[in-house]
Length: 588
Image 1 (tube, rainbow, N blue to C red):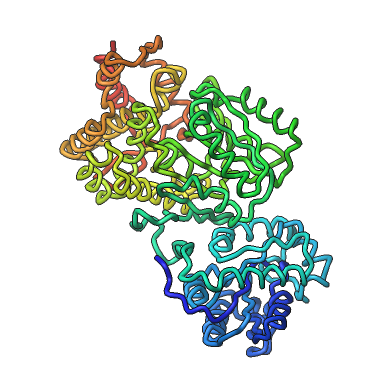
Image 2 (image 1 turned 90 degrees about the vertical axis):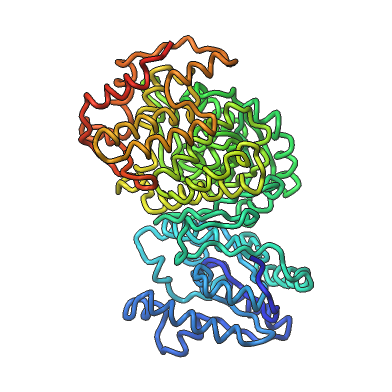
């Protein structure tokens, strides 16, 4: 939504140590305006330092005081308001500040902030270590806390990078921003991030850029979904405080279509750009190609603050993310998914990795991107088979968590398969939000909540690994795996035959295979037949190596109703074999 803004004030936000108070004071003097530092006001009102309030009354009490102080400050006119580094995360604060003033964020790298807070007191007005930074490793804490706030710092009117500027120079940049922007309202950029109080999976309008925010204990990052977003990539990167040299990692097919365009967009935004292009296909997602990218980064003297962009489908995202996680012990990276399965699944959640000959994604890490940008228009150039494959993950999200979304898909099959952009954007945004909601609750798949996303994947990974990733696209295997999981659910008395049929019908309407017979028929209709024959032994062996195995028992994600998943590790092996035979008996 666009806020109805009455611009009477100037708000300075940013992390501790970026110079908010001193800069705001300097700007107020030059504009001949009033000046308020909300932290100083809280100290004055309570007679306690910020640290004492945190220690004696708790952070909740401090945030309550902060909210009331900001409310009063926003009633002023022609006032420069310096706010605490965490104040903008509160949605009430954000909306009030955005309605009454232009918001400028002061940015700096974590290392710069550490130096200023702990070694260069002259730059910062801080006379005490902030409570949230008081631990044994303050630099790492700065990195973590700053990363969690970055999506909120990015959603402002203007950003000033202060690393190499003194207070006077920063103040000049703030005033320049004020003069440029004060006549430009209502301002088009403000789409407030989903608040912590709003369910991340809530339905958003098709034209909203921010579909959802993945918000974990250690980091938050926005997921942008819309049409024509590719042209905004450089702009959104700068708003997220990314400023290093960019290395684009893509495959031959995608780079041919979008490589030059993305390079130009980034160069126009002021970034230096290199590109590394790999062959398409799951076989590329290997340690061999990861090492080739390492060599390229070494050759180009990549630094830790440089940026990797994954431009392509799920394979590129997994490979590029794995490199970002491991080179120089971690680099910033961005997901720019161009396939449907990547937009709704692979790009969200921070799972990165490469394949081992014995199993898919056995070598990897959890390493979250700084942002995800999905431009739905890129799907118009996707090969039909890959597009069809992606609908399996979309359907899966509805099947495990949201029957209403399943109903939406059932009612809009024609619009979605024809790529009508309004319905398409709505479906992708909703599916992405479901994935974000789950991974926000279970960052590293340790609590079991994230396991539900593996519905259909146990059989799917068995099929893929048994055929060396050369016969099935991921979504094709997942669709067959979902049918198998539903049939297992029915055998265990969890799911009705009507629900099994309902899922199968929906998969078929989107052109997905629901048995190996259907998959083989699809190959006969025009795509090259793989030489890889299936065997029960090969499938079951690959399933036993899957990441969902604990204590040698497979954790099966099953359904007890449409939209209600359940995890079971007591599925009788004979039932599994019977279902595999049912899926496989007509393979040719």
